[in-house]
Amino acid sequence: MKFLANINKTENHLTTITENLKVHDQAFFFFFFLKTSGLNNLFKPIKDFLKSGGQLIIVAGQNFALTEPKALHELRNLFKPFPTSKLFLAKANAATNVFHPKLYLFKSQKDCCVISGSANITKGGLVDNKETSIIADCIETEKIWVDAKSYFDTLLNLENSDEATLLVIKQYETFFEQQKQFNKKAKPIPTKTKSQLAFDYNNLVKHFKKFNNSERQENFKEKLVNYKKAKTILDQIADNTRLTQAQFEPLLDSLVGSKDEYNLWHSGSLFRLRRSVYPYFKEFRDLVRYIRDNKNQTAEIVFENAKEKVKMIEGAAVNYITEIMMTYNNKNFANMNKNPLTVLRTEGGVNIKVSSSSFSGADYDEYCELIKEICSKLGLQNMLEADSFFNEIYWAIK
Image (cartoon, rainbow, N blue to C red; front, side, top):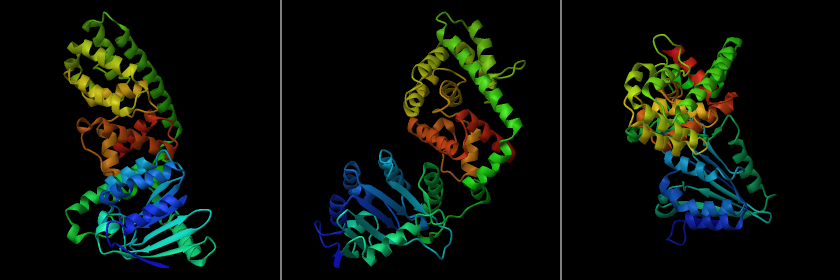
């Protein structure tokens, strides 16, 4: 065994972890908390390790809200091209059972290494602070490795940790933001309201079982038909090079509704300002053409550029953009208005902006990814069905 301390710039936890990543092909980290200052130092060594075929499993703690969400997002994005590498958040279910280890395990075909001590993934923990650890170089059959790896594996079960999906990180962000102003009196576990507890996936499944009945299925079939009709109408608008306001008005009314006509789109508030939109039929046509022509681009790019175009249309805003986007690509583009945002924020405890108008392209891209996660977990077919589901919950809690 060897003693490790942060002695200087060349002898510290950062250099030791980096060297072990270079000579091993599997690594398992679990630590109390993670900060961007530490990840910035380890980012390139981890990226090089992954690109060389290495597998990295990380379990980070959330007690006292010391782990930074930005660092979690960066790690999650780094891991995306490497499906064997995973990021987990240790569950924080009890104030008396705080997740507090700092353990780093490395394995190759030839040998293993166990590092256990006081260093978290922060710049201070890796380089600057007075931190110490014990290093044990060993082989796979030695007791220290068997015991350490066995303990690590117990932390990966569903009782002890959650995979850090976008939804899990966004829920943790809420706790993090709550605690930022109370760092001196930080709580060891998140304060969960009834609504937050109600939105975990188990309860979502309960909601879905109520939602997934024959009446709902018929309503969804009708919605699919309506959005196909909406696409046809949008194509008529986009393809008409001689479009007039007189031609445009009834087409828009069929999409958003009017006093005497049922709307194909399900955002009920759109019809209120439709008369303001009428004179901007050419600008509306340009918006539709842009979204249709770029429906296979990323959500971020399409949304960002569409926001600039919709500024030219009085009475139209983000809700028009996302309705058009979802009409043309309901696999990748989600509708965004007050209803789903309210459900995610108040029922899910998700740290998400209140107003859709404040979303950037990157925000919307993350939002779509979040809805995709929920679709995948619940077996929802596409963004249209997710939109129906959120509306169902919204009107149930309103």
